[in-house]
Length: 241
Image 1 (cartoon, helix red, strand yellow):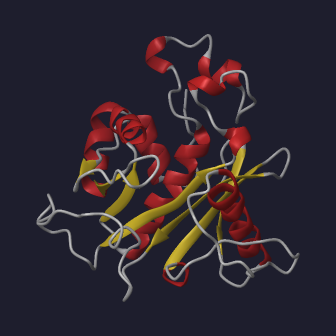
Image 2 (cartoon, rainbow, N blue to C red):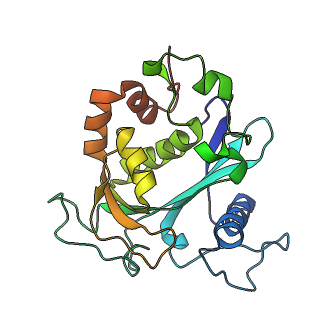
């Protein structure tokens, strides 16, 4: 699928694209953020280091590419129900029962390894750095009610995740997030319910949240109908006129 500036693709295990994806994960999570200690001798066919773990074989993987340059822009995976459980389980306290009575191990996945390349991030402190899209048309000269508060790169990744979950029967997704990102998602109409305490031993400190597809649809239908249309249809524009 595509948006104005990005192309989104699922990458399949064993392909060259999958190696590029694992190289991208190494660059972000091992080199830049230093959150993950990689396997020291795991190299791609091009001789570059990769990052992978025991959950990858049970996951579906996505990459975003900047259309005009071909640069890798973002990555994400959805860990599906599997014998190993989810990645958050051994590292975080998850309080049960979960807030949704019908949430089970069989219909709950995990959004994991989501990353945006540094040059495509949009943060207040990065206001003078290049980022995705056209900043003038995205953030300036727009009436406040029409202002684009969420870059198409992030929404495009979430569309891939949403459509996949619809296809495979995943009704809920867990995700470890810091308070800042969870607040942003809630503001945008993506209800994130905390299901455990903050783990202060992880930097930045994070906790596990549960996202319900039904609650997300209900919230967006009341507040952001354009975003909901974009998520539901492969050919829907991000911000229709």
